[in-house]
View 1: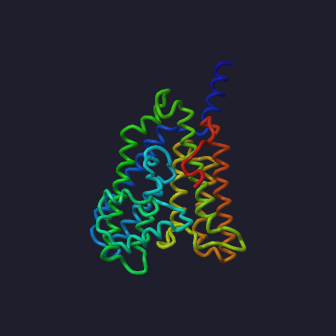
View 2: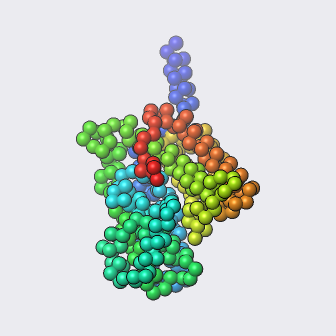
Length: 319
């Protein structure tokens, strides 16, 4: 009977999807993602002119890299409000635009120093602050260009600090929890990863799509993310790809959750949130949101039990 029992146990084991867990997620997903963000923002900061499309190209590359880690709202990116300073959106009261207009009225050269830029409101800085400048009706010149370049330097500084924070201690704290550390147990660390995954997925449905979707009778296309640059749907596509990669490192590539990601990703090219006032586009956007919610449901039914945890508080909660 023993050989048969061993065979049955082995068969059951291999029937289960492989689970990589937290250490692999850090090594294969998080650290490479932050390295790409640091590299992209450094390249953006190295640009010294606003002529042509060079600055826009660099900004888009930095934004792409940010979306690859934007769901990871834990650790060094939370310190000093960096996560908001890197990309302050949504901004329902238009605070950033008001502060940018005020900066133009003063045109104070002292504001362009690294120390002064770092002291400004999170709504004024980062990727969204740069977008207002480099995608204005006229290309940035003079003070506007100088301000855009100063914001690029500030963005690169924050990216480097976040990556350094992960590599100098936070990665260790997450992968080696203990009673004296930031995470007291492996269960807490797994909960942090699951929370990052689920809330990152939900942000696409509830905020990136939900805000412009509003209601069928009164859609709000002006609420789309990255409206000036027109990269709204690109952000969603990249975010789904990034969160799917995290899910695969935490659980498995061939899973119900992965299939749900694939279904939602296939729908993204059919949707244009800037045209959500069109009833057909509104319905397509609503279906996409439902498909993204299905990813969340699959992850909670499949990955959460495998990790032995649920979701906890996340920095995105209450935004």
